[in-house]
Length: 186
Length: 216
Image (cartoon, rainbow over all chains, first blue to last red; front, side, top):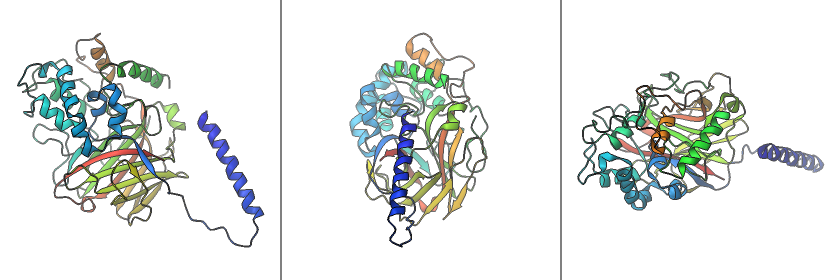
């Protein structure tokens, strides 16, 4: 509704401008400079890997995490992420507990806190296929189950089996192998 | 619409607890439900394996009826960030912003300055534009200056039994079901897709990438 009002206001302003232009009959052709791309834009939301802010960042820090450049996130959030992992998962309950990548809560928390998605320009893309780790993210990659396994699955992915796989393994529509790859909307 | 309200309500409840788990849908109070709310980010090798594809999805949990009136915001610029020397500071950006029914793309190009504030590099060498695909139409794509580009509504490619997860976190379920339910089934997002040659991105094999929604 607000948007509609804004649009109407916008149209009214445009109308005023058009009228003014017509009145301003100085014989010169109006110059079409194309769309206006000027102005300063400030970060409102950002993400690298899926579900990082939603899972690991305490509620009162979520907005700030979204506007912290990745190069500063590690220093600011690694400790909170490690604490979050320990609080969230029984697989990190004991000292020395690690996940299947061999990372303990402190190390894994530190890795996750810098929220960038690493992408290989030489290898095929996978979020995690058992061998390759984080060479990008395909549309079809079951990223949530990978993350659940790394959070809850323990050293060999066998711990907490009822928490480490949501048993939704694929999208509800098939993807295309060609650009733009995503499925048409419902 | 009803569904998204229900989901938003559910997420609001759990956000005060341990935090909700979706890809990046409704991830933080300041952006949730706005035109700057990023739901997902993907980066993968293209059908042409010499290319990389970047996908930014915004405005999640759109029902079909909400999708028909959903629009990109002319005050929101989508910026794909590429760090090609391992310091997690962007060396290149690809910027996308809508104007009058078209999505304009600039880059890959060095940003005016790295960080949280940006200006649009409208004199970039690599520029492309494409008509925003209307709801119900086949995908409209364009190829210009070596870039393939698309903007418009798409099925949300994210899948997760978010409902069961919230029950687990809320203490009313002890684990996932043997057969999960995709909470994001049947919902749409507003997608921005750009495919560029890997050779335009620099680096020596590994890039760090992320996406931002930046508001004017």
